[in-house]
Amino acid sequence: MSLPANLQEIVDDFAGMTREEKMETLIGYAESLADLPERFREERAKMEPIPECMTPVFLFAEKADDGSLTFHFDIPPQSPTVRGLAAILATGLNGCKPEEIIAIPADFYAPMKLEDAISGQRLNGFRGVLAHMKQEAVKTMG
Image 1: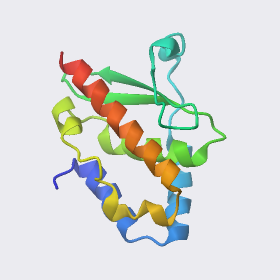
Image 2: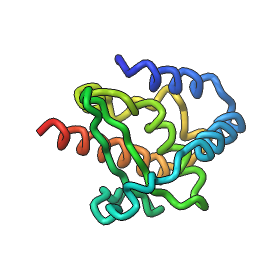
Image 3: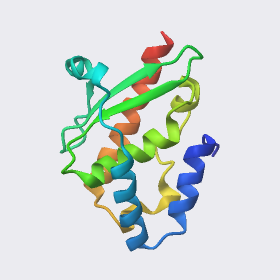
């Protein structure tokens, strides 16, 4: 499986962590997730909701002049696990081309063994966020 370098690095890091380290790292990622930029606040109605997540998660993809994508999320601060998972995807995929994002396998995170640290329901949401990121990537190609 070939992943973008930033995402592969995250997968490799998590693969060697204990449950406690995974939880601490997820919280670190949650704290690193940028707030929704001011320019998107009025456009939140246009943001893609992620129905697979119990937490309200909204996604917006922004295409740069070079064709790469940056993903912006609106996730409540009181949902650190969900924010951490979204931050992993943003960190790993921001700056990638749509084709790279679309090519990521749905189970790319299997080596991370996230099920050691989070519930199956959270993993379903994680897969849902990736699926919606892929949908947004497809939209930017058309």
